[in-house]
Image (cartoon, rainbow, N blue to C red; front, side, top):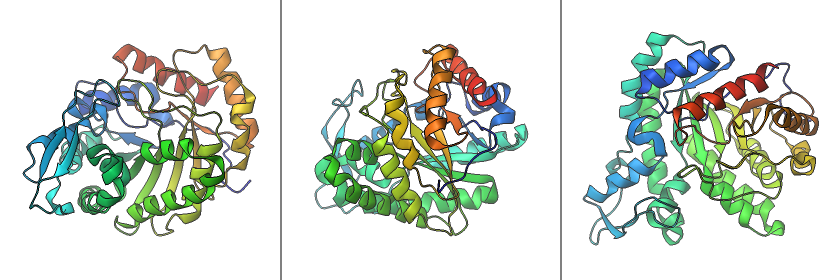
Amino acid sequence: MSHQLLDTRRALLVGSIPGTDAADAMRLAVDRLGPDLDFMPDGETGERRDWIKSMLDGFREHPRFETVRDGDWSDYDTTPRFRVRPGERLYGAALDLGIVAAARASLPVFRELRPAATFQVGIPGALDLAMFTFGPAGMMRHAGVFAEALSLTMHEVHALAGGEVLFQIEIPAEMILLARSPRPARKALARLLADRVAALALGAPAGARFGVHLCLGDLNHRALGRLGDAGPLVQLANALAARWPSTRPLHYVHAPLAAAVAPPVDDPAFYRPLSGLRLGGARFVAGYAHERQDLATQLRIRGYVEDAVGGATDVSTSCGLGRRNRADAIAAMDRIRELTRS
């Protein structure tokens, strides 16, 4: 098995936590999972709870964008769509995604809490930002602009936090695109998509540390897509690990084994493709923890996963917790703890 086999399980929080602010969210994470976490997000509270929604909503007032379709974010088909205003040209330096300001505000809180963890900052994929902003037709054309903006963002955050930060690249568009593609095309497509994500990592300062969150979407706590088995996750994870730049260490790959509100399937066949994981030195984080499934079933699923992988795996939910209410989020964190420690 060509990836890091684990002696002990660790916990991961993907990003958002339903707290009143960063201090509340991080204290909640420390209280429920502190000793089990290697990386600590700031909770992505407030307008950031819905991933890139606040970024796109900000484009409504951007002088270089115009809205071609408004949307209320009630579903994946009712999101706003933009185009570059006629006569304008889009540059990465013209895009403030809000990530630097959020990190600057929450880093002092993180330092005050002094958790035994590294500060974790979510970075949406460039292809993902382009797809949700311009739609499939503009996805490839404008991905480079967002890659430039994200590179500038990572340089600024790294200057603030240095060795205290890990960047988590988050890529639902790539995951869904691969899962929906014909099986014969998936290997080549996985390589193409992985090349773009690896190039985004190269845009960060040398030595910057990374994790990757493969994602199925969690808008309003509903997934954008479902998987027939774990095969597409394995193909994309392996392609990423094979192409990852050695100068930007990859610490983990997180894979969603549930689908937002839907718990993971209780069928060993779904998880058997995990035996093909080849992640090199990166850890595998299995996103199957779910508060709406009983513990006995969750432990059985952990067995399916770890039997396929060939050893213990780290534990998380399928996505961030920000679309849950606080009680459900606490239950989900407690379930992660149970699956990590038992």
